[in-house]
Length: 273
Image 1 (tube, rainbow, N blue to C red):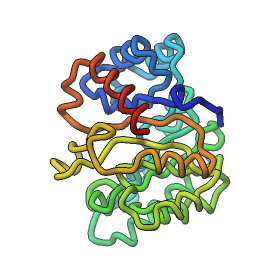
Image 2 (cartoon, rainbow, N blue to C red):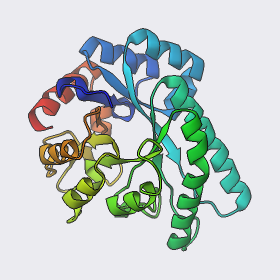
Image 3 (spheres, rainbow, N blue to C red):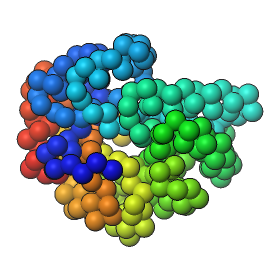
Image 4 (cartoon, rainbow, N blue to C red):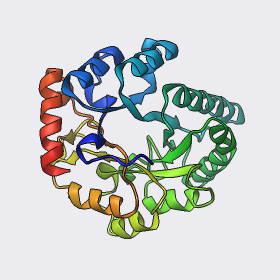
């Protein structure tokens, strides 16, 4: 893992500027001297993979991760095969874009069988690992807050992510720590320590009180209750020195003029992260 200074670790997760195209987001990062960007597949699709790859190379930006793979569980074997095919395409995209991390949002149960869905996740990751390894891409399991279990992911705890990841080498399967999703966990710091050497991403935003919306209500760093710096220090103690992604789903943030948004992100990052 490349050793970066705290300032040089800042990465704009593209969803934070979701109203922008990829070329617009890249141009904004260059103007604001933000050194890294985390890309989303729907934005890559708008631009085209080859054009997106050229754009990134020409800009000089690092790509901290690609979001997302996963969404593994499905009601039928055919649907599960289609999802595996899409995950192989996601691995290809990550390799082409020059990032070693594909973030996995593992997916919800297609019915009421949440335990069965978790088995599907484990089986799918086992199938995907050899292909990802052949492409030089690590699969980063991102546990999501338990209130996302019915719609987005049945992997909700760092302990669950570790139980899966520990079946593989750290360069094959790692863990993404998103402060918004894990800050509440009473076992958080012990689980971060458990994941030492396996953490491949740290995402920051804030949990606003009262929470305006579970999906679209993430706050700018410092506007909520998360101990972002303490979590960052714990992640560092566990060996992670890579990019720190600012990932904010919030329409008010999306609607800010981009230069104003990035200036605020930089200020809050230095103050709170």
